[in-house]
Amino acid sequence: MKVILGLGNPGKTYEHTRHNVGFLVLDEIARRANTTFGEKKSLEAEIVEVTLKGERVLLVKPQTFMNVSGRSLAAILSKYPVSAQDVLVIYDDADLAFADIRFKAGGSSAGHNGMQSILEVFPKGTSVPRIRIGIGRPTHPDIPLDVFVLQSWTTEEMRQLQDILDTTIHLIEHEWL
Image (cartoon, rainbow, N blue to C red; front, top):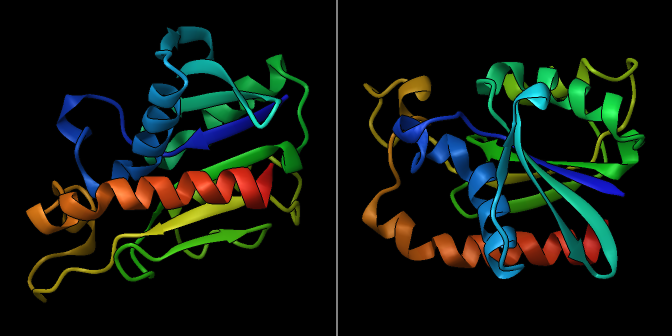
């Protein structure tokens, strides 16, 4: 079994924000598999199992806030015996231009608090695969980054969102699985 952890914040308030792009990818995978997420309070997550390229994959949307996503992952790892290489984390990255999508087999958190929380679950130096989805930076200098990531997508960004989801799912199936 493999685990894909999409990072985001729980609740309707954050549903259509840039910070929740990890949730959006998992929602699209579940939609294509014609299934829906169920809440699992003991794991602090919404989960659903799907099959991708013949592989059992547990899709996980932590219901903690982004910066403590590792709590949910720790609970998942205590129930499902998977290695760090069997976990893929998907999250937003303001250091990448909008729609720039990158798969990486490991590395640091690069300042992303959600990814840092994930890395803290594993022994120091453990490689954890991830896909970073570029959301860009605010175009106006008066908009702080923490406000920008929690804003809704613009109309133009919404037009490109399906392509971003398609590309990300392609990377999952061809680079990670």
